[in-house]
Length: 271
Image (cartoon, rainbow, N blue to C red; front, side, top):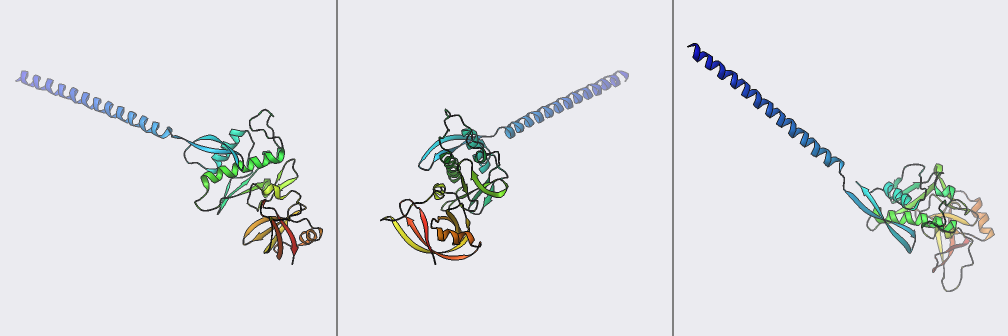
């Protein structure tokens, strides 16, 4: 009797030891699987696919293509930073890029090239001899690159370039300014140059109903036509005097002479 009781006791002890070992092995297996799963999840979260976009550096009709590696979603901020990193141009902003219904507003800070001028060495790939060509290149490059990725099918992407504190964008060393309420175009800077007489076979005259916005410099005037802001040249002394004394919002009827080859538009009459 005692012998059988002793054998039964040994059997119970062995069963307890066996179960304890199984539980331990099962616990270790579960912990191991948990660690492995955590490692896999961490690896998936930290490994993002590197994509490649193309940015354009140059002027209208003459652009170079450069690679822009990025992760996640391609944004206007990433494109602007890519242009800056590629060229060495300081394109620091005064505030975040603002999305408009038909485009974007970029408000540049006083640290940017628009206030300091070009700082590149003459041997640099992106050095440009004249300040005016330099600024045309900077603005054309941004405009072209943004249009590549953020233009909606069939719609115009308008780019508005502002200076610090929501001002017009002055171009260091040129005496010229980009009006903040006029969408940028390649030929915009040419608009501010002194105009010649427009005539000959390529000249076309027409009348427009406009709303006066303001003068831009001494020989350019900003007008609103069908809710679109445009810049026109005015060289006649009598006409300049009228515009300089006009109140914003004044409705006008004007005559324009346009050179259909160059796109130059000269105001020749106010009715």
